[in-house]
Image (cartoon, rainbow, N blue to C red; front, side, top):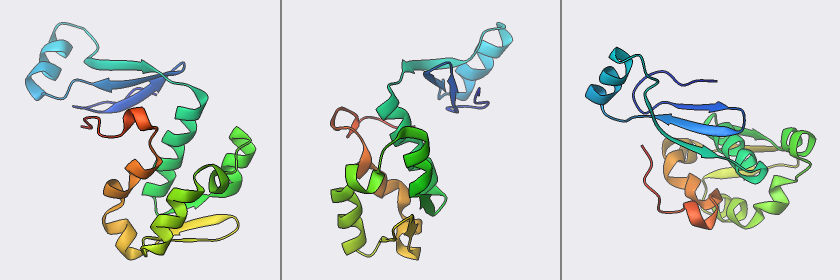
Length: 127
């Protein structure tokens, strides 16, 4: 999956890609017949799980069984502390098979997601 547009994300053959984040540079690359890639990062299985988990959370719901089936991981166990903290603060509710963001959680979901990042990715620039 290739992302199209400035700063868009994509994923190809185990490599996470992001396009350049400046319009002028993006257009210049295209005019030169080059892909407008700004960075690329090979990702581990754990990182893929986190990326998919974050994307599901951004939709407002997370299907716990999906991660058990695809990654053989119980995200409520692996990320239990983060889920419990966000739940106690009123940002989400936790069921056996479904995590659901509250209205307060949906309104600021991007600010809440670093709780699930690997330590080395916390505080990194995100565009």
